[in-house]
Image (cartoon, rainbow, N blue to C red; front, side, top):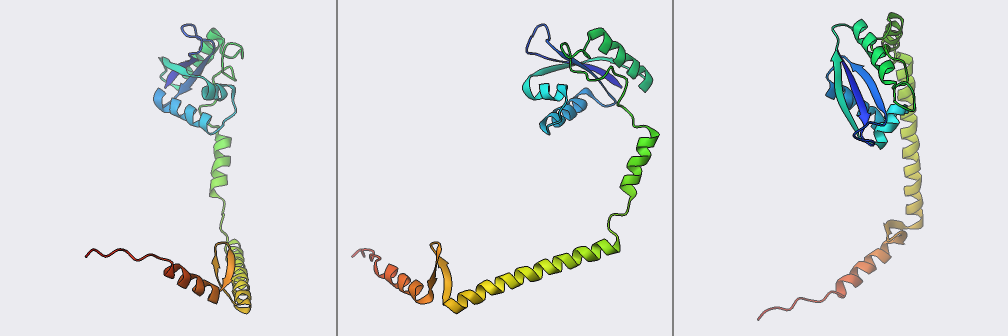
Length: 184
């Protein structure tokens, strides 16, 4: 478990604003999560700054358990003043956010275990698909029958032409071609 310090390098050598965070993983992995959240448009003070400014990051210290890590995070946030919006990007005083409570985990589990595809839902979905396919087929047939009734066979250059006009155009194009010179 690691506590890390990140600051924007706009005001280098003295950082203008900073962020203190914690992770159970490596710093590189956690930073990639922050960058991913920023790319996806997460709207926090820190992620908005990540989209706009370059950041440097360094590990502060390690902890042997979660309670110690939470206490260290609170201590460093207070020490560096990163909870103050003028000096930092932390939105809380620290010590939270690493593990879901049992109640939250039970709710997440229940939402994942619910039945999504009941036989009635599947039957309704199949019936809707068949109806839409029949409507598309009917619409296609009505367009084809209209074209046959008016004698239209092809759509050429954006407008429908009769079969004789298309055939006449092909003959005319072939007669306008120049024959290649034969080498004798």
